Image 1 (tube, rainbow, N blue to C red):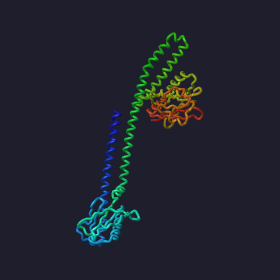
Image 2: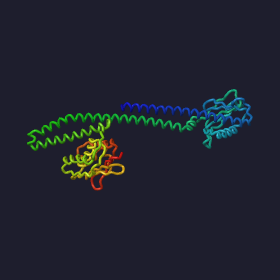
Image 3: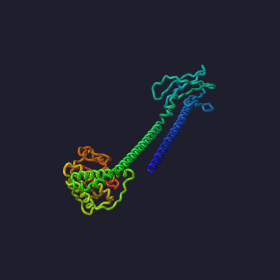
Image 4: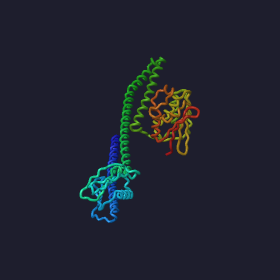
Length: 416
């Protein structure tokens, strides 16, 4: 169901961006056409003003003297012979007044030799005019006229719409980023599913033979021959202990895979901290004779938590404190309330954690690279599991190095 929803969201997002891009391209094209019409209108008005001034305000023509022959070519019919210098002056004056700031070329028809008399190539943005010849065809049935060409008209229109083109380019970039992001998300999801399926299959395949080994070892350990031989009893105890440890690792992996897939199912209930922590501490003491655990928690303090997973949190933290200690482990568990909630702290005398590694200790499969960690079996899943349970309860967890030795792990339970 989640994959189907994701595909729908991706499809809708892709269609929306494609639609926006198409609309933007249509708007840009429309804006170009409007700018083209605006340019033609300004040129027509400017040329009409030129005709008016050349005729001395006495225009006798009954129809529009300005003809738009082609996209960049205008022909202007006049009723008198004019000098090229006068024409050039009026053209510059009117084009400047109407803000027609692009290059243009003019040519004047000479009726005496029946040829177009070439004028100049004029660039408003440069002091010196260019020496460039452009073809001007001769028109029949006209006696006095001049022609104007705008060779860079398209470039001028595009430059005036640069904001639209930049916006279109930005949308195209966004589209490519979106497609790449979706591709990356899909690849990551496939990789995550493949990894989870592999872990599930691997752990289930391990649990069947491991259960057989445990049953056989426990049965073997009860035999009189084994009980009467201290060496054989030690060997069977090692098999049982290591099998139980491997079984715990597999359970952790299964819990992590289950949490990644759908989240762990929690059954919150009220837990009184002092007796609950004492029971777990006692089990750790029995397993490790040299460990010293002092529980400094006031009687009556309670929290709302899932009993099974909360016990796993405490056990994992105590187990890490024991494993990563180079002397006899000493752990102090304390709790205090403030205006925002309750803090439960686990202080040990272990080897500590380098400051640069602290932000990563809750990452999946992450282990601090030390000589001690190389001696200890594990997958780097204990603290990742702890962090997941803490987050699912909406608690907070933090780790700091002590001033002398070891670390202090704090779980914060906010007041609701």
